[in-house]
Image 1 (spheres, one colour):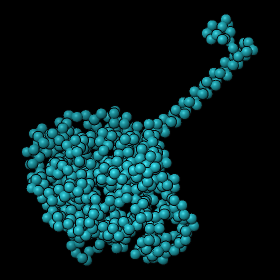
Image 2 (tube, helix red, strand yellow):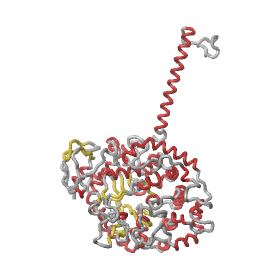
Image 3 (tube, helix red, strand yellow):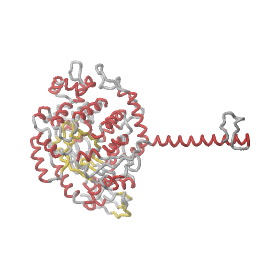
Image 4 (spheres, helix red, strand yellow):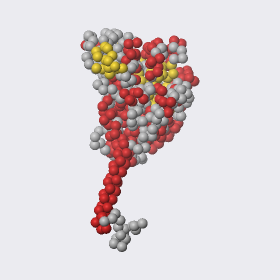
Amino acid sequence: PLTPNRCRSDRNTRSGQHYRCREVDQPESQGYYLHSGTIKRTKVAMWGLLLMIPAGVVGLTDPLLSEETLERRSLTRFIKGHENNTICWERHGVDGFLSVIDSHNHFRPFEGPPVPFGTYLEWMVDHGLLFSTMFGIGQKIMKANPQDPDCCYYLHCPTLNYTVVPSTKNDYANAEDFTKTYKKNSTMEDMIHLTLSVTFPNLQQPKDNNNNFNRLENSYPNTFGWAGEINVFKHALAGNGFFEQDRVTEKKINSGAYDTLFDTLSARKWPTTLHCDLGCDNYDNVPVDEDPRNQLNDCHVPTFELMDASRNAMWWKEMLGPYYHSFFTKKNAPRDSFSKVQHLRVWDTLLGKYPKLKVVWAHIGLSKELKDLHPYIHAHVLRTLFNRHPNLHADVSWDVLAKQNLMNHPIGRSVDHLTNEHHTDFNEDVEFMVNSDEVKDLHDDLHATWQIHEQLVRRSGSVSGPTHAMAIYLELFHEFPERFLTGTDFVASFGQKANYPGTKNRNGCVKDVPNHARQLTDTSSINMFLDDEAFKKIVLGENYFRLTGLEDVFAAPPVCGDTLLPLEAIIGIVAGVVLLVLIIIIVLVSVYFCRKDESGTSFSRVGENPSATTNV
């Protein structure tokens, strides 16, 4: 527990209170220093006092959003029938493009303490979030040897001595915070709307799912409204034994092993976030060789899956279309690159088995372990799946997507890295071509928009500008604007380094205000490029309200339409008008003096100047 601040409030405004604080004496290992000086706080700092904890002990030097922006970002802007719901959203102006909805938000970590509940809500409100899911983490880290050091994040201890095991603990803890703190505090409810999620279900060993679900529901009836994030395939857990257990297979899906769980979620119409990596092409960030007992050493595709792929070549041809030979030879044998899409058939089978389930595909199927799938191919897969499965949606959560795929453009990099001559997904059998000129033109347009907002993004974010891949994905966002959701994938962990050193990384898992601001900024950065229709559906919540059944209460405000004339166009028009006025003035002055010299009047005589107009 944290010691209450010894502070006095100097003033209180909508955007913040100023506190003058003396230093709080605490051990260095706790990391809870409050230094002398002025710390900006919003009204929700009061929540910390209500909860007997200090609200947000670490802060940004400057607030992420201005006082005026925070004043305008309120739930009343989204309440149907409220006068504020008619105020249009100035997306490139005072209201901004940072997300107001976090559909993928983990309030609890894999292990160790979370950021205190009231503190974390304060961060979210201070950063302009108004709606959020309330995920736990559906797994806990289980130590094989009690004497081993504690670990708060699986990549800090990627061995089979630290297995990641599905658990209901985080769901019960979240439900306690939700029912006994959030729902009993009208101030909190007036400032942010939370949707509680069930995260424990285990698809690898599903036999206990039904009993666990019923116990949780009976303990907290009429409380949950979402499910997930639930793992189908997650290669980041390969070092912690994920593939040592049973896999999700077509046979298991078709056997009805998941019917009770997914039929229940379908009947309740809960959105369900599923994590299913499309495939794998590297383990650069997952040291699977850390533990010699781990049988994986690369992105291995089991022999039975390779044989199944060859037998079902026609299915793969239909799914992959012109990109089939990127992954199969002329003799229908899977290439080494097949690992990039190895889970696609199982994923499609799961979606087809439960057509009424509202699925949200986490991270659009990408991960650090799938870095180099050509965006043309990935967009084709998404497009095909969207057309096949009307209830499939995807979140563009996780800052890794922004920093690895969408917004990490190196200065001077050309479109050549995506062309047939350079990308690894091309070979002599591939029949499609990349229209590099079109991609370059699209990217140039995005870069112009980026330059307008670059300073704002760089102040709190870590991305470097839109990639050529972003130009390709943007067309997909505009083609299917009703299928995407915003999210951060933030994990509100607070494990101190002294208590959770792990085996590889001894920095612990302490998150703070700048961490959250950066992750929100990075994941929101793609919002600036959306057209107004997509912005309203994806960013302002039309999709989220429809999926959660909140559309009778909440509605997205209208967009001001300021994307029709971007800043460059306005500057160009103004400059053009100024130049035209100057030319007209110069011409009029010249004509005036010429006429004065000729006749002493301001008119020209037709007889002396045949080209002049008559004096009438």
